Length: 316
Image (tube, rainbow, N blue to C red; front, side, top):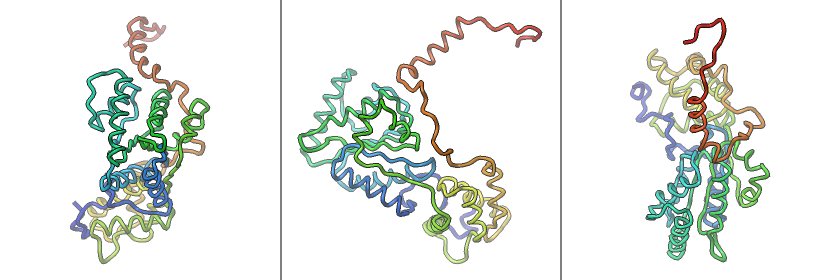
């Protein structure tokens, strides 16, 4: 809609994690290099953590692009709300390993034989699990046990756990100390600085075909940083809708007032885009059996419990 008005060839602030738009700050470059190094040297376990919207998924997609140009087999699990049986089903399906049995031991045996074949063929096998902070303790324990699939010198399966800062908090718990001790590399993403925010916006506009006169005024970019706190996903949101509003008003370059209107529309003047220090408390009911049986328990409660009688009020 606004592309021709601003001289763009494509939308510069799409929320899709397109690797072309990966903005390599020093920290992002260090994280990507760490992931590549850990996989190449078969470290086994790597973690990638960062605040919501700081580019973890874009970084993972760039890693997948890099792996696809090498002798690597990859599996990307984006649904972390699963139980142990579903974990093995997803892994086998992603790696296209045929297994008729639903027995976990048989599935594990099939996976081990397949990994050994890939290792003998000189291939690297990588399992990436997104939103890993949502994994239950039993599933995390099963994932830890997968690192026991190894030769005398190398790990057969390279595992990347990607998640929000709550993942780091969860890994500090005593019941996960064995898993924590096996993580050989810890990579992180973070919010952008004010200067990096300016460079980030300029790069995305350039990739989208911008040239010539500026599209955002300096004051507008400062306002974007003020409300986004350097979170790339929020920067994209503000800039995308500022482009739309400015097009409607036929405004060039985009002014600070337009960005402020977008921020108020999405209540960014009221809500912090970053979680408070210390992270969210770990759910004490974070167990596989609790999650699996909660719905059934609630159903029984609704059936067996009589409707409450509240005196003095008419019941609906």
